[in-house]
Length: 163
Image (cartoon, rainbow, N blue to C red; front, side, top):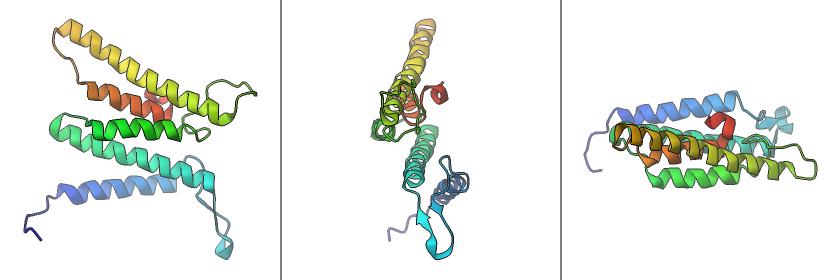
C-alpha cells in the first residue's frame, strides 16, 4: 500500500528459509513427524517437537545472519530469546545431547544439563577469544553479540556442536 519497491533480497531470504525448512523436514534429526500410511497417519509428538525447535533455531540463524551482514550487529532481541528457547528445548531429551549416564537422573535432566553446558561453553570459548583478541590488538576484537550467538548455538545443540 505504501508504493515502496520490495527488495529482491526479501523473497531470497524467504526462499532460503523455506528451503532450509524443507531440508529439515526431508532429513528430520529425530525421525519423521508423520508416521503410518493413508488414513492411519499419526503425528509423532517427539519428532514434531524436535522439528519445531530445530526450525526455530534455523529461523534465528537466518535472521541473525542477514542482520549481521547488513549491520555487523547481532541484536539482543534475537540472541537472548534464542538462548532461552534453546535452554527450554534442552528439556526435550536428546536435543542438545546428554551429559552423563547416571540412571538416577532423568534423560530430560541430562539433556537440560547438556544445553546449559553448551550455553556456557559456546559463550565462554568465544568470550575468551574476544578477551584475548582485545588484549592483543588493544581494541575490541569482536562484539559481545558473537558471545551471545555462540551461547545460543550451544543451548540448542550442546557443547560439542558449539565447539
